[in-house]
Length: 81
Image (cartoon, rainbow, N blue to C red; front, side, top):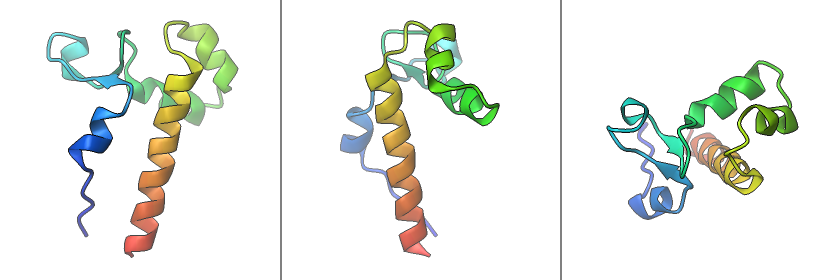
């Protein structure tokens, strides 16, 4: 199964992908915080508020937008099966 994510959807996300920033890993826009740091921290049991304490340059809006994208992508995957 192939899931296609439209470029317009990616452009709406608060992320930057630049080979000069954290070796091209997707980071939250305006920061050097990799997007996967959010998921890794949540997976490790860190609360969202603790994440913001640890990464104060990431805004709540940015994190919620990324989590919403993950959720909608997983929902689309579920419907495709």
